[in-house]
Structure formats: C-alpha cells, structure tokens
Image (cartoon, rainbow, N blue to C red):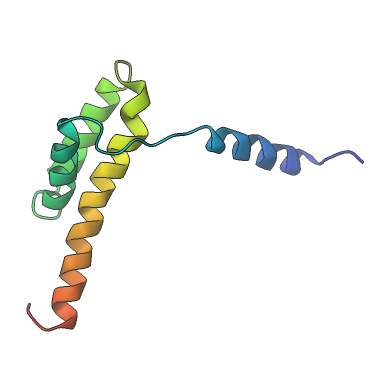
Length: 92
C-alpha cells in the first residue's frame, strides 16, 4: 500500500527531529544564556540580541545551537514560574 504525501512528510519530519541532540550547560557561556532568559522580561531587546548572537555563532558552533536555545528558554521558564508562584502565594 502506497503512502500519501502527507504520511511521507510526517515520517521524514519525525526522522529529522529524532537526530537533534540538545546538550545543556556544556560550557561557561551556558549560564549567560540562562541569565539572558531570566532578564528578557525586564529588557525585551535582549531577545533580539540573543537570537542575533546565536545566528551569527551558528556557523561556528552548529552543535550547540539547540542547547543554547533550550538554556535561554529555561531562563524564561524559571522567571515565569517564579512569577506565577509568587502571585499564587500573594507575594506580589
């Protein structure tokens, strides 16, 4: 039985996504990525600076790109988790 074009695309995309590895906190710059994520809600332009920096660095450190984005996202996640928790317990 032949597969449809959509099924072929899903299988191909799944295979590509399975080959991505995210190595977190692999170098000392990783802590700055997380710190940038934590500070982004206070200074929104940091997101533009961070993404520009990552795209410029992509050719040199292609292996670290996904991990760096995850570290940045972790900083954002930590900020918003603390914010929601603080509002739940009425600290803010």
